[in-house]
Length: 305
Image (tube, rainbow, N blue to C red; front, side, top):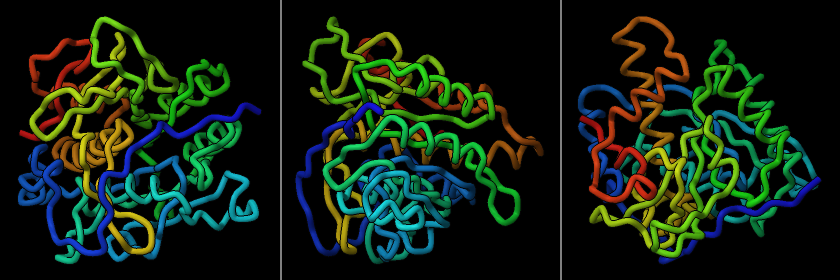
């Protein structure tokens, strides 16, 4: 087993109450899709530190989970978050529009929690691989599958078994969305790569700020697919609270939530199930160039039309 760590993130502010649609969500024009009736109904898997399933903005969005970490006495049914990262990610994807706190990109998405990291943000590659395989096998009460997988960790080492698991997920028409990493030096000519983000099969997400500027910490490399808000992102946090965090970890769930909405809309329009390559194509077609280098922004910023 090899120990890996969550991509580091910065807590900029924590607060007890709020009532808002976060700026990042508005940047993507997600509320426009809600008005059209598309709110991301479907299942998104989140491999992270777990989730505060009692959070008022998430308690109706979490449909289940499993603990693959050694934390919580290795109880596979106890996927409670003791770090905050996983709860923040889940909220960005699916926080309910309830007039009480924040809203996620896809406020009717269902989140299946796959806890693979502990309170300090550490996990084992074996735990992550097991979580991916479980996500592939999982079926809901009505036969539903996990269609999108959000992963915000990175390793500088390429682990072949991890790559095999990712390939299997994609082969099963699961869109795997991964953070690019926060090792960037604000120089597009240098290459920073973390795995699984750098695998060609995944959607690798970089970060921009609220003005569309590249975040100085975001990795640049030749496999970046697109960018999303990742600076001062407001979302759910531990103990029913909220926090503003920064990192490509925060950009990744914006894309996962966007994918959930696209699946809902396109499958309704087409009357059939989308394949992973089709969904990837739709994601790329839903970007606009911010006129940064392709090594930084990939195809551009995710934006609903």
